[in-house]
Image (cartoon, rainbow, N blue to C red):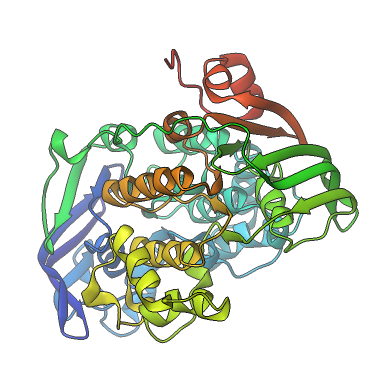
Length: 461
């Protein structure tokens, strides 16, 4: 039986300790969940275990052979498959087939076995091999990253919140594969989902740089936030028979709707159905092929990976960029307020945003988007990678902005959250609007939810 073990790991950035004498072991066939707040060190620990980061002290071993001992490190790393929190971070090829095959080839797996694994994974995750990796939605990219790691047949898999961007079918496929004998690997799964953690053999919390066994209190329910329906406000965005396609392939077909001030509208559907494309059309980033789009007021979009929108030397400079360029008065105080609302502490404001954790970067990216004081705010998967505190802050922010008259579109696979905040939901299916109406009615309709690929919430009242 193989064993991945870490002993007395100490690691930090710029003399700031992140991991303090952490010890952890993982056997092949064992499933271990790791949970914790944004910035607690979950990803850092996983990168040390994968041999990507070298600890300042302590050791990582597989079957008694230590990492960081010359040429042996590369051999040890071939026993570990890794899925990054942002799937783009691990991609090397533009072709779906080649991407899945790449890591397996580097593990020196026989050709016929690689082809058999790829065939099974393509079917399991429902890939369209006619598309390039660059054409995939965020959810499909997450599926591709998982498939690429699974294809290696590695003794150990380290998964950094891969479910964050998966739709219902993707989540089911991941659950089926990890619960089956497909891998036989030891799995370290960084997650925020109680359901996933409960299916693991053990669950650890990383807190103040150390590990402890998780307790029920570590999985808090979502805050009970309700947003009152606002009707009759001014139209800020209107689609009239809008169509759009990439390279001749239709993505949206004859879409019509309007969004009014003070509305919080959910936008749901399976990965690749056109949600992000619709958001980019709303903002004028893409131009429709046919139809008419009316825009009234300032539109702001937090893309699926808002941390990819960061660019400045400091957190504060990044958040202030939008308001300053729009000529908004008191840009600094507005930016400070946005950061405070999202829980980004003042001690981080003069730091580089690229030294923050993924969850912290996501908060900064969101702060920059709301600091421009938009009339329409579009949030594309805003809850991914956020801990409960971060989710609560975003929910309270949505409630405040809606009360002040901002129109908000929330794109997410988290129907449990949509049920709390959106009085209206638009559902896309095959590029068309399949449903546009009361959120409760949609999420209580099991058959319709299954059809559009979202999780139903039974008996919402």
